[in-house]
Structures are given as structure tokens and as C-alpha cells.
Amino acid sequence: MSTNYSKIRFIGYAIPTTDGSLVDIGNPNGPGALAGKYLGNQDMNTDIDNRILVLKNAVELANSKLPVGEDPTSIVNLFVAPEFYFHGVEGPYIYSDSSDGDPADKILQKLQATFPAAQYPNWTFVFGSVITAKVDNIQNLYESNSVTVRNSVVKNLAENWQNSFGPLQGVIFDALVNFIKNCHAYPDVEVRNRAMIVSNLPLSSSLNNAEFSEPTMTVEKYYDSNEDFLLYDVSQPPRNIITEQMTAYPVIDKSGGDIKKTNTDPYAIFRQNYGAANFPNYMDFAIEICLDHSDLRLRRNLNNEPWSNKNVDAIHVQIIPSCGMQISGPSVAADVNGFVFNCDGQYNLDMTTVPQANSQSGVNCVYTNYYVNANYAAHTQLARVSVAATGGNPSPNNNAQFELMTTNDVLSVAVSGTPLKNFDHYFAGGYGEVHIYGLNNGYVLYPQ
Image 1 (cartoon, rainbow, N blue to C red):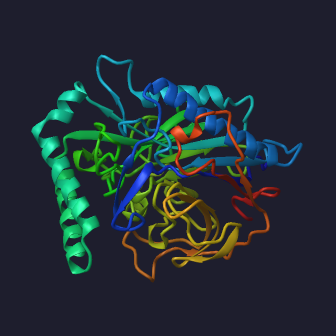
Image 2 (cartoon, rainbow, N blue to C red):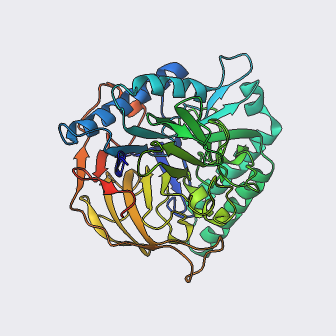
Image 3 (tube, rainbow, N blue to C red):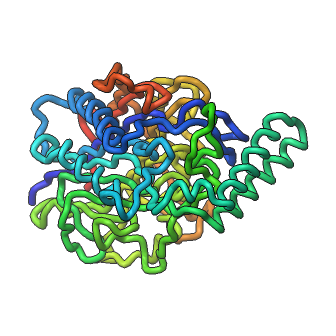
């Protein structure tokens, strides 16, 4: 039996994906919210093309650092970018029945063409996420009574929070958060937040091992936090934008599990096949976008997934593209010797700027920070499970435990520039860094 694809390497693009001219309302790394400006190009196609250009630059930088002459069948390269990597100047990319279709489809097609199997044969890419909204008449939406009143209330509360202090500031903030929660229950617009996946290794369903027809895939987010969208635009004069208080994500029915049946369904768990004559035959991945991880999306369904082989199958690589999240121990659903990899575009785990190996919030891990200032930072984080979680109800007695990690084979490389001349029109926190975990040797997937 062959042992192709018996190792894995993790590559994260630590680039801030938070918006421009940020104004913090509360603690944006906790229960807070943000005002600011959505950055990008007014033309959607130009915006998408330029963001892909930045990705291509980062992937090529990472690829240039990998061992020369490495057998591409020996290792899986997993590249992850942060949540909200793709978005427009109004927040979501807005489209309608009269436009040329869902922008997510267009993005996937362009990503597949940009990162072909011929050039990246053993790579799997999770290119952060894209936010989109289907609206027939966006101007009518902005001018509606519901939207104008919501936006007025929120901006008033946010500005009064900024002008207050002491206990009153806490009272105003509570009122703001509760108002937004109620608005989420009665949204004006449904927004979709989907991870963009391109795999140059064969994809299939973990339900029945049926191979997917395309090498591209999406996974949908359902948890809308207080800061996924701006509270208001700080431009002068203010622009019309999709605000937090207008939105909700689609409900996802996970009563039958979270395993993908098709490329485009909203579910999170999928499989890569390496062949019946190989060890391993296949490996199961799962994606939780940001707050879905905090909400235990995968963990709560731990014992309910309809695996093709219930006695053997389990999530082995848990991936968290985020903009304001880190690995949470109680949320880990990966199996023994499995991996959890987080690429975040909002904050740093501590003030170090070189690879570190220690405990973060009770999770033994290795991590690397990218830091510009208090508003613009990013990090990547990798943990490996030594004892798997049991049951879907977290407690200190049944949560996952983690191996001690080292920085011996971890590399952080600054992105010194991109071919995109007006880069700061798209990203406010600099070029970012590429973080490579398992640079020379990778990590053995299933130790024997």
C-alpha cells in the first residue's frame, strides 16, 4: 500500500480584513461593534480581480519557500485566508435577477482558473469568505422606513456611547447590542457569508463517498455577530451601505448532520480521496467560519453525523477562517491526532511577532501574529488533538486535549508588496504575512 498524501502543511495568509477608518464601539475583539468604511472598487469585477491578484501574490510567495524538488504526492498543502476577504464597497456584493448571477459563482470560477491543478497539484485553498446579497432594488431598500429608522437609532446610540463614560456608557452599550439582536430577528436583507474553496485533490461527500463534479465548493456561515457589518459609514457625506442592523444570515438545518451532499449546499464537512490503495484512503475536513466556531457548530453535532463508516470516520482537519476568532477548546471536534487551523484577519493573540508555542485560552498551540496597530492585526494558529472530545455537550471532562507544539518547522514571511498599485483602496492593514507550519517536513496525518 502506498503512503501518498500522508502528511499535511498549513499555510495562512495573515492579512487584516477589517474595514477602513475604523471606529470602535465597545470592544471589537469581544462583544463590540464597528463603524468605518468598506474598502474596494466600485466595479465588482475589478474588485474581485484585484483581490485575487493579491491572493496570487501571497500563494506564490509561500510556494517559493517550500522545499525544492519536493514530491507533490507526499504532502497536502492547505492554504487559508481570513473571513471577509471578498466584499464590496457597500459591504456585500449586491446583485439582482437582472445582473449576471451570483458573484460567488464568478469568484470560484476565477479562483479555479488562477490556481490550476497543473501548477498546484497537491494544494487545497480556503480563500476566506465572500459576502453577497440578492436585492432587486437596492435604492428602495436604503430609502425604506425600516432601514432609515434602524440606522438612525444605531448611529445615535453609538455616538452617545462614544460621548459617555462610567456606568452610563455600559447602559448605552447594552441597549445598542440588544437593539441589534432584535433587528437580526427582523432583517431587511438576507446576506450570505460563504467560504470559497478550491481543491486540486479530488473532493467527495463524507456521507456516501460520492465524488463531487467540481473541484470548487462553498461552506455557509449562519452566526451573524454584532460586528460582521459596519454600524454606519464614516465617509463625508455618508454613503449608503449594508449595516449590521439590516442583516441576517440564512438558517441552516443541521438536524440531519453537517456533511456536504453537493458542492454548493451550506454544510461544513467534506472529504478528500487519495485512493483505495493508499494510506490514508481519504481524509475528512470541516470548516467553521468565525463565530460558528464559538457557537460549537461542529462540536454540538459530534455524535449525529451520518458518516459513510460511523466506526472509523471523523473530522481530521478543522479549519477556522475568521475575522475575530481563535481556537476555542470546547468547540474542537477534530479526532485524535487531528488538527485545528485558524487564520484570522482581525486581532493578534499577544504582542509577539515571531512564531510562538504555548497555551492560548487553554489550548496548547503554535501561532504567529501580524501586528500593525490596535485596529489592524491578524494571526494564524495551529493545534493538534491528543485526546478527542466526546459528546456534543462541552464540559471540562469531555473536551479535547492538545499536544504540546513547537516552532521548529514554522516560518513567517512578510509580504513586501503586491502587483496591485492601489492596495490601500482594498486593505487598510498592510500587506500582511504568510505563515507556514510544517515548512520542511509537514505533519504526519495518521501516526502508525
